[in-house]
Length: 114
Image (cartoon, rainbow, N blue to C red; front, side):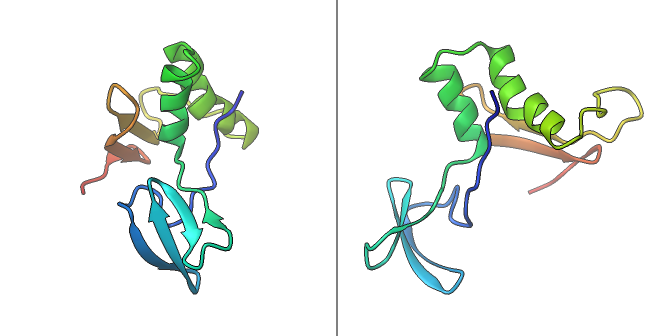
C-alpha cells in the first residue's frame, strides 16, 4: 500500500478563487473546480491527508500509515537506501497527532523555517 498525492497549487489553501495554470479555480470545502463548474480542476489532497485517512477512517496502525506514506513511496522511487542514521541527510515531515497539519519540515538534514 502506498499513499501518493497529485495535489495542485491550491492544496492546503483556504476556500476561495485561484488562478492556476491560466484557469480560474474555485475551491470549496477542499474540492477544486473550474470556476464555470464544468470539471474538477485537480486534487487538493496531500500525503498528510492520506496519512490521516489511513489512521482515522481505515483504522490502520501507525506503522502501516508511516510505511504507506514514507517507506513504500521511497522504495518505489528507488530511494530505499536512505536511512535515519548519523551522517545521513534526512528529509522529514513532522505532522500533528491527527496527521492533519504540518508542524515542521527537515530537508537534507536541516530544519526549514517558515
